[in-house]
Length: 227
Length: 215
Image 1 (cartoon, chains in turn green, cyan):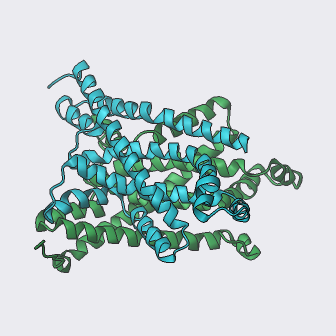
Image 2 (cartoon, helix red, strand yellow):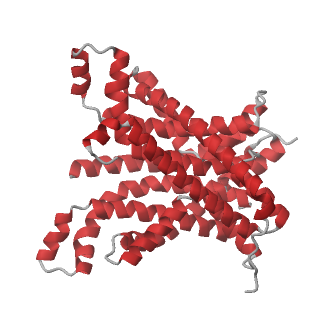
Image 3 (tube, rainbow over the protein chains, first blue to last red):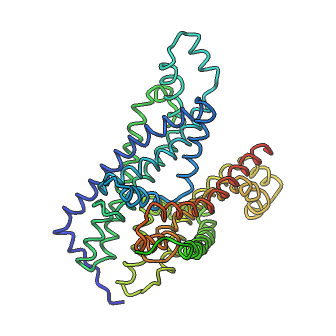
């Protein structure tokens, strides 16, 4: 094979890659915050609300978890636009990612909430904690603590899945790669570089989540238990 | 402008067959790759363990889309022209192999250590331990998880549309380009995916419950 590897495009193109990576990080962070909020709310509903509402949330979770993200993105971007609401690609992508992550978070958080023994809640009630205090301190925080590894690996998968938003022209890392490879004809090198950037990003996210975890669950750290 | 009609629906069903075919290729390939990976992850040789772990980390840390681009565009520039189906099958195999390897490793490790020790006491060789004691129990634990992962595989075949392979998602795009009824078309595409995936999800949950009770 006489193929010569040529990474010289990096010299002038690296700012574009950096910009794309930055947008990927931004999209991911926003999607994580909103998706986590949506998922937690849905999980609480799924455990405590009226049976009919529970079924509704269950339906949302099943529909999202059994259809591809790509199709969800198309429905939001092309579908909603055809109904007369003009959304930018970035906003559409974000909506799709939040709705998608929300469904997965619901399932994970539900497992966490259901793992909290009922007696804990009863004990808190006896101590005179308000409903909100019980939900926040007795149910949610320990629940998050228990499912934290599952939750964060879902978040990292979401970061990787955000590459699909390049298909509706969101200018994130993968879209940048597509542009650069079509202009330099160095597709192999371009995608290898981008794969390495994604690898670095997932490492950064994992370390970040671990750091957040040690701060958030200080009680567990004091007990000396591993996260 | 063409109105969406029954011919389009038939076209979608036809394309769904390719989605299923690609899923089967990906799952079979992934299983063939996943078994040695899982065994390597629990092997006594450090080099083997590290190599398998490294491979899994790399695949799980890069988007499937990039793997797909690498095998389709990347390899073609390096002189290997791959058909979209081959490129998609290859990348989905690499992808599901890594995930299945990791899932199955967990299942092997979930078998209580005492089982292996007991087999050791009975004089079984390491190979015999795996074949007669550990793997049958691990398979029991692995079944619901594996069926659950199949849903993931079916959904990820939608990415093959991006390199131009005409499966369900690509067929949806093609129809949408001529009918301009994206909401209807993609809702239908989503519904077909749901029909394929939902039974797998339900089966996975049922299996999990059954094995839970049995244990």
